[in-house]
Amino acid sequence: MRNEITVIAVASIGFIFNYFWLFPKVAKNDVKKMAWLDLATMVPVFGIIALLFMGTEEKFSLIFFETNWFVFTIVIYAAIELPLFSWYLKSRNLGREYLNEFKGGDWFTGTSEKAVSKQLNDTKWNWIRTNEVQSILVITANLSIISGTVFLILVGDNKWSLRLALLHMIAIGVFWGLLHQSTRLVADAPEPALDERMIQDRNKSHFQAYRILGGLIMLGLIGLEIFAISSDVQNTSVDGFLYNLELTWPQIQAIFWFYLGYAITLPSMVLAWKQSRAPQMIS
Image (cartoon, rainbow, N blue to C red; front, side, top):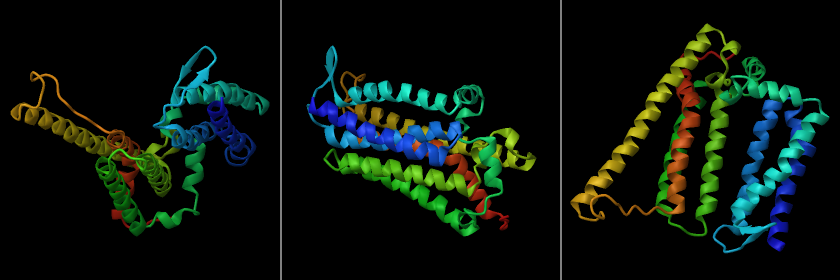
């Protein structure tokens, strides 16, 4: 029972942080920001619980059956969070706005017309919109993703692997946010928020990002095919159809976050690099 109480206590700290500070002070009445912040705070909550219980044989009781820490955490988190979030929206008369926002086509673009409009007039983040800083930002973002991936592949499965994976994930999130701000959210903005030139820049950045990501996926598939062929040549495959491909948890995280990291950062990365090559124009 102590383990179950620990999970509930950690989750409760996250809920208190959300509903007593993050939502009222940061999200305010922006339901989209509220939803994304809610998802973002799940990461440290699950990370802390994972640090406590990953790799252990501890069992967790869910009324009629026992399960592992991961399933228990998901069920408990959902059982508390869903009604709590619904009640919070209702108490602030934001329920209908949330549903309307969710039905809108730009929910998963990562930003809104209001946010883009605010960013187009923003000067607070101008320090990362200079040509030099944008170039450095793109280069360091690539170095972070690539070096983190290589390190996780080579680190081995040990007690530090989870911490390293979390740091790698956080670094990707930080660079995504900085690139997002550097380009004034244009790469992920809905069309009504942009003028014709910005729409062209956004579309070109997505097209180039699509080609780059396609190339990275192709390299991964080629590597997989080379592994299969070399296994056949060296007679290490089983009957020529089954292959012994053993991956550690850090290696799986390396592959996952390599592709996900580039999938979410490439549009802003491409746009930031293009802007860094252009004559300096910061308003």
